[in-house]
Length: 193
Length: 347
Image (cartoon, rainbow over all chains, first blue to last red; front, side, top):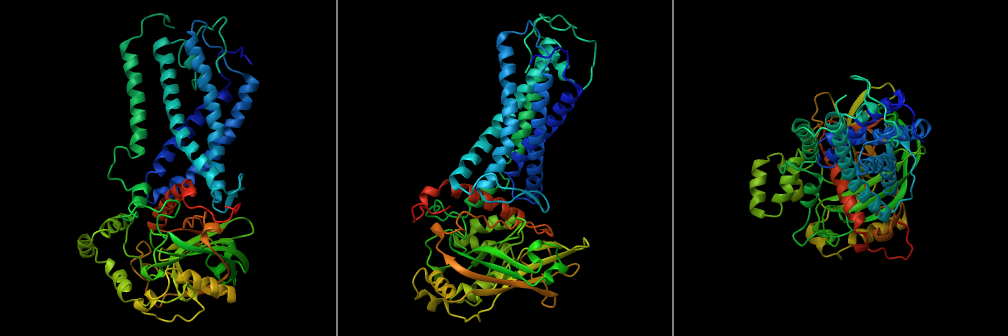
């Protein structure tokens, strides 16, 4: 749906910044844990799993809010390729935020590992044990993680481009707080996704 | 608000480039791309590779093995040390694997010094206790880094002498390897955790422990020369025959450290007078060949622990967990190179 308001709702903004911190931490934990055999390996793995499930939960809530409240329109004068990039990248974000935890959960299930979230507290297996499924999901989890990080960098670059170069109010729609003078609403822009 | 159609200023664009570049660099650093000396799971696992190349589809170490299923009968005494559900009085299903400490799945049994036993004990609520033990009384080295050095040195007899000289802690293991008794059966072996773990009891009190499986069968010492006269797979054939005749048993004994005992160093045994507690009996009831067996695609990761148990300051369970996972990821991706023998066999 098309949002009529100028900014994302406070709850959407809160979730965005909370998830930004979670996802960045998750990507760094993930790439760090698979590159060490030191005791921090176990610490990182023990954070990676519950944090992934937390991101999955938050992403589903966020998707519901997005469907309910929509998003503010993009500036009318934003070039079409940039609008398209904004839309596609946001679909990709939702797909990754939801699929990555599920792929990780499925990967552990296919390897018959107990999916321990906290001591003594584990999730059920969502897939039968299978070496071929494990390999498929492992590869997906690995390569999508790098894609996720690349997308995150692109997203940050775009946000900063809006904030510092175009100064078109797009950054302010998701900014934690209004920082300076209210921006003029776009008159007939397509909605941001 | 500034006019949106000014040409982009250089300053903001440069700032954006710096921020993105810094983010990418931090990620690459975390991934170890700037740290070629970092001991990664991949390097550790690769160091096991024999000169003839890795055996695709198999574990990268302890590659030769045979599966068993059975039961762990907990007597309940262990509950005073740990609230782990598998130590509460009762019977819990076990999946296990007898194995040899070699990267060659076709190594003749008599040529491999280290024998191992991996087990997974399952509690009704789905919690698991996985452990991989060996018959050596001490571990050869104190740290994962030294273990990596040992793996590299072991490929070269000259380097091995230098390694032993630089690592006096290796002597106890070396002595056992040279002079310790051999047996003709997995059923006569004592298997030791060597690594220490922490048991947490119901009051929250913590106890540093190690554990061992003591065989019910009386060990009969046999010389290596005598063993070499057997067929290449005599250990597997013997344990399959033996278990088919009657379940084979081990007593699980937990040793509790005193304050100040070396918990972080598996080359250092604890004094013999430390408190030991028999917590139950492992019974191997059925043996299955590995290609179609239930242990084949199980990772006996020593860091898979139920509530009431956790890792200690011993650095090895983390290193083993990381390396075992890497080995698992590699070999499951190579499953076609280690075909199952029965069509439609369950993975």
